[in-house]
Image (cartoon, rainbow over the protein chains, first blue to last red):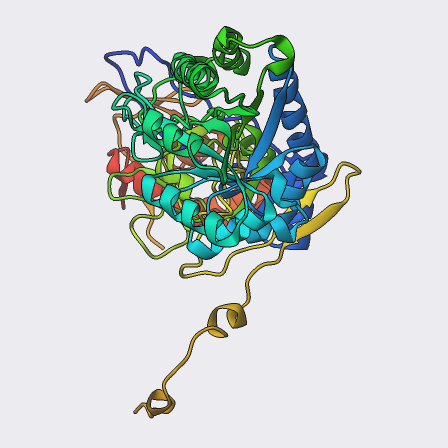
Length: 453
Length: 84
């Protein structure tokens, strides 16, 4: 006779008094497989924890977003935000879908070129562009988005010295009504700096002004600020056309669209309170029709969405190391993935689902990572069913800023795999080995030996 | 291994609802939690209870013992059981 299913004994105290008007958040239903492949099979073969990306999901997201914008405005171009996730395989999926590269450092610039992106399809953003990087970008005909006056002067000097023309845009910042105001990048609109910079560029023979760029912030929870930003860019574009007879190739609205991750301190799920991408697209495209241009002269709309296109295509599979009770009786679960792999858990309440069917009893728990550090908390409070050592969880929406902002700390970083459209699994970044860390270290000779007693 | 007894004033219903008339506190139990209290009421020792669970459910004795100890600690905190 087979034995009955075992669920650990649980007792939960019932509280009377004020009801929680939002209700208790239920545990997510188990996610036993990713793209049709059992979680157990993936971790057995590639180890735990394991970052898993879905090729199908990335392509779907990109195509859906392109459709949303293209049905509202005729000329749309996406540029993949490298800093969001610059694993070669991930970038290549976006490039196959037609996205250009949007980079913010020489390292990212070289990475894009290494993957085969030519300079003309690289947008070079960011406050830190070295002289060497600028020279490279000018020679490659990359689209250089100037961030500040010193950079503008460097570029003038470089183009003159090389006797080359550079394709440039400026980044503009403005008050779009959001807090905090993002005015540290680019030239400010309200104080006239942007107009001044545009004038300097228009007057320089070596600088070819081809676009305007803005990036109003990150995880913007309302569509209206985008409308305000585009209105400003349209005003500047109309001014350029009138005063300097410059017709722009493009208007770049940057990124900042949110994903379905819920911020800490947010009561309701992101899915319930965020505008739809269609609403964002409406806000971004509507003001573009106020450009004083004939339809065939309309500039291309460039978008640099990162998070919105990749977050839900990434999963972090992790294994339960143990259960514990805190001094106040609260249950805690220790899993083998910590905040060093998931920097984003500092500001998001990542969704965590059990990866196997378990009993119906759920308990409010804290989920801790494996680091011997007090900061290693993935969730302070989450309702989960009882978990045994060796059980697994799937952490959702971890595609953005995870495998770029992660760090090697205390443990080595795990494998990253991609589930391909045909159902095969490819390792797209191998797990680290001790040699990877120690090979770049140097121990001075006098420290080479010691004897311990 | 230490043995425990249920305190006199604890009322447990068949479907796992537990009430402490003395304080007005109420609790819910899952199936195994309810079984453990049942076995304690019958006067079983801790070892006997762990054996019974491992015999009836798909779990080895080490895990059953670990979970039993964790559960008993909670019961002690809630003043539902006491060591004999």
